[in-house]
Amino acid sequence: MTAIEVKDLVKKYDSITAVNGISLEVKSGEFFGFLGPNGAGKTTTIHILCTLLKPTSGSAKVNGYDCVTQALQVRSSIGLVFQETTLDRELSVYENLLFNCYLYNLKKKVAEARIDEILEVSGLKDRKHHSIMKLSGGMRRNLDIARGILHRPKILFLDEPTIGLDPQARIHIWDFINKLRKQEAMTVFLTTHYMEEAEKCDRIGIIDHGRLIALGTPAELKRMIKGDVIHLRTTRDLEIEQMIQKQFQLSTKRTPEGIFLEVDSGEAFIPLLFKTFGDQIQAININRPSLNDVFLHLTGREFK
Ligand SMILES: Nc1ncnc2c1ncn2[C@@H]1O[C@H](COP(=O)(O)OP(=O)(O)OP(=O)(O)O)[C@@H](O)[C@H]1O
Ligand SMILES: [Mg+2]
View 1: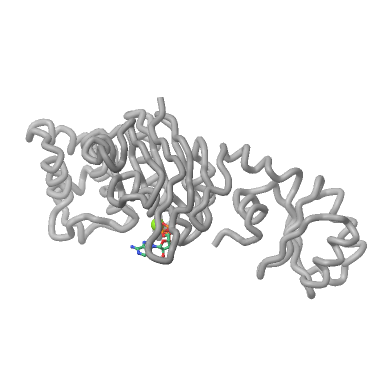
View 2: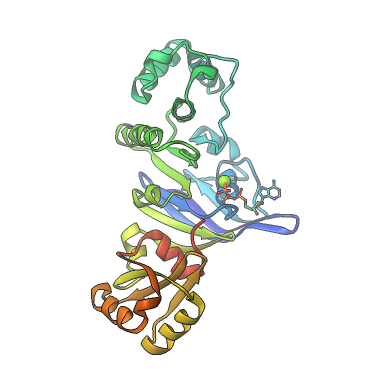
């Protein structure tokens, strides 16, 4: 079954085209990642899918419901965790959760059971009656997510769930998300600009300037680059890049970080590089392609 169906979606804000003709489908149960740099259009797309914004043109369906004409049905079948926390700081953990249960018309008894269950899974059980002010950033984020799924949505939208958190807190949040995916068999639509998070998704859409520039499993996307990726820093990147292009007939990319080369075999190529430019090489790295390399390959820019 299709969980999300987007066709030729466009969203313009006056002179800015935030979403510029995106089409994609997400299957039921899939863990889908929307990966893109700042301002790429990720939040705008999620807000359209969650009926908070109307598209300028194109269409979007969520759980089979149209995001414009059947907004109520869409809303009751999804959970959304915003990029910025929306917890009420004046209330306790429990009160924040209870408030959401009321919004979804859950009966008190059901609400209490769900709250206890979700506190257990989110690792916040011993914080039930603490005020939000006393929680760490990671705990607040877990609570945001817990709150987003109290009504057992079929699809959970997570907009940058771990942004700004330290690595330890990010690990906890991922444990929680993974538990939820197993328990509830939910479709998860995630936006992120962390490559390592995107790596864990079943499929990824890479978005840049409002356009979907690549779509596939992490492995499929990385196969767009054959062989190895070499990252080179030299005393004069501009000239050396041109010389490499001429001498080895390679496509290269140059960024403020250095020169990137895609080669069939890094091991075979590095000795040739040293033979020609040895005294001008300051640093050299050879790696299997990452999603950052895929982005660089497609856009000529680093993923920042
Ligand atoms: N309410 C608005 N009015 C005008 N322009 C907006 C509005 N919201 C977003 N934009 C613009 O639309 C573009 C896409 O923004 P969006 O928030 O969707 O990006 P994003 O991919 O979520 O970025 P980030 O990673 O920084 O969260 C940006 O150029 C942004 O400045
Ligand atoms: Mg955003």
